[in-house]
Image (cartoon, rainbow over all chains, first blue to last red; front, side, top):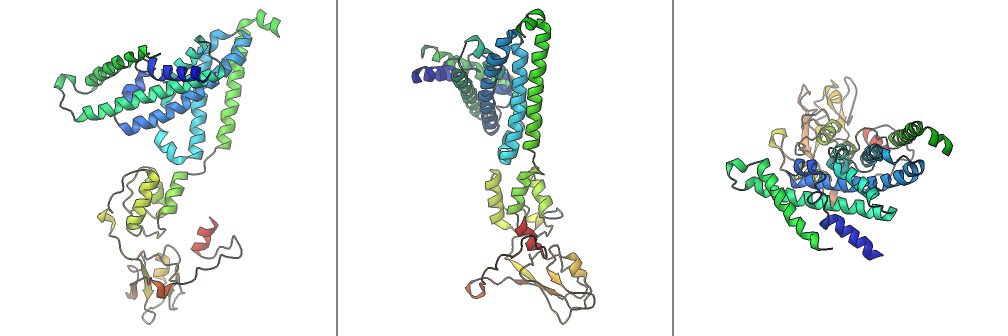
Length: 192
Length: 201
C-alpha cells in the first residue's frame, strides 16, 4: 500500500517529470529560472497550489461533473477551480505571512496559467486516480517541477558567467541546457 | 431531477457551471472579508524594529513612512539612530544581506539626550513645536525643559532655538544610572504622553 504511493511519487517526480519528460509548465521553467532565489520562490508557490488544485479538481469532477454526466465540462471547470485556488491562496498567505507573500507574491498569479497545474488535474481523471492518489500525484508533480526548476536555475546562474560562444548566448544556451537535462531525465525511465 | 437533466443537457450544463461559479464566488467573497489585511502588515513589523526617534534623517517624515518605504523595497541602511543593530534586525526580518550604514544620512552616534540650559531659555516654544515626540515641557515666556526618558536624541530641536541654549549630552548608562523599570500604567487607554500610545498599540 505504502509502496504503491511511493512508486506514484517517484514516478511523478523522476520518471514522468512534468517539465523535462512530459514538457508541461515550460513557460515558468524558462521564464523564472534566471535566478536561484526567484526559482525557489516560484517552486514553493507552485508546490502549494499544485497539490491543492489537484485535490480540489478531483472533488469537483467526482462529486459534481460525474454524477450530472457533464464530464465534457472538465477543462473549463478545472480552470475555474485553479483560478479560485490561486486567488484564495494569495489571500491566506497575505494575511498569515506577509514575508512569504513578499517572496511568493508576484509568482502566485502566474501559476494560474501554468499548464502543469491543469495537466495534473486532467491526468488524474485519465488515470482514474483515487482521492489519496490524486493528492500524492499532485504533490509529486509539484516536487518534480520544483526539482527541475531549481536545478535549471542553478545551471543558468553558472552559465551566466561562463564563456559561451556568441551565437549561443542567452536563451539559446538555455534551450540546449534544458534539452540535455531532459535527456538525462529520460534515463530514469528504466527506474520503475 | 434526472429526467430534467436527460431532457435538457445544455441547460443542466449551464446550471452546473453557474452553481460552481456562485459557490466559488461566495468562497472568495467570504475569504476577502475574513482575511482582510489592515494596512501593510510587513510595514507594521518593520516599524516595530525602527527606533521611533522620528528624526527624519532617513529622508522620510518619520519612522512609520520609512517602514512603509522599506516594505516597498527601499534600502534598509538609512537609519543612523538605529545603527548597526537595527540594520541587522531588518536584514533578519526581510531575509536580505545586511549593509553598512549609508553615510549620506548620518553616522551612528552614542545615545544622546537633549538638555536645555534653563538660565538662557527665553521661552519661545520653538523647540516644543519641533519636537516629534513631545518630550519638551514649557509654555510661552516660561522656561522649558526636556523629559529625559521621552527624548529620542533626534537633534531636531537644536536648529530652531534662537539663543542656542540646547546641548546634546551623552545619555548616561551603566550600573550607577540604572533605574527600576516604571510600573505598567494602571488604566489601559490612558493616553497622556507618546509612550502610552506605544504601550496601548
